[in-house]
Image 1 (cartoon, rainbow, N blue to C red):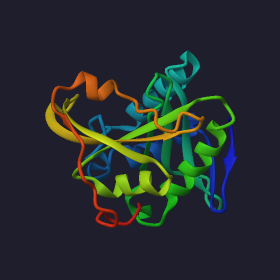
Image 2: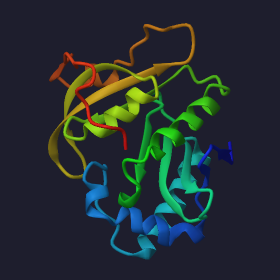
Image 3: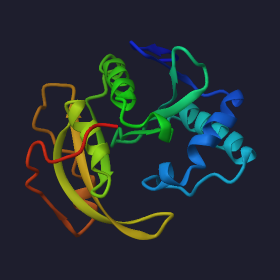
Length: 201
């Protein structure tokens, strides 16, 4: 899984030459608001970040970490990743100027189609309740809301209510990944009215 192509995008592994573009994404405080990390401070941190992601993929801790690139321009405008642990957690981020154009949904759809060929039984994804646009991406991907839970989020160390979505690839259509439900004492199921969330990023 080294290269994926969609109508508008090319998904590929990051290289060291992408450090400047990744720094532009991950140093932006608006982009960083809902990320489990603090904004990158300089280009050297971006280079180290790319190396760490490559090492995680090599070790199996991460299944993939792809740059999202437009076909007309090689520089990454975002990223998509899937964890290698039992959550198979899907995550994504996008440079602010490209929000609200459907790029994240398009990139994630390509990744999902590729993952279906690997034998992975499901993926999950979570979003902060204060970031409903991310939840809209999950819905657009066919993911199903399962439950919500409160977590003291690190490294930022504040309480967040997350919504957990899941997409099963195999015949176990009713399987629910329960790790967060079992781990965090405050958990509940919300009644999410269809159509109440904001447009996809």
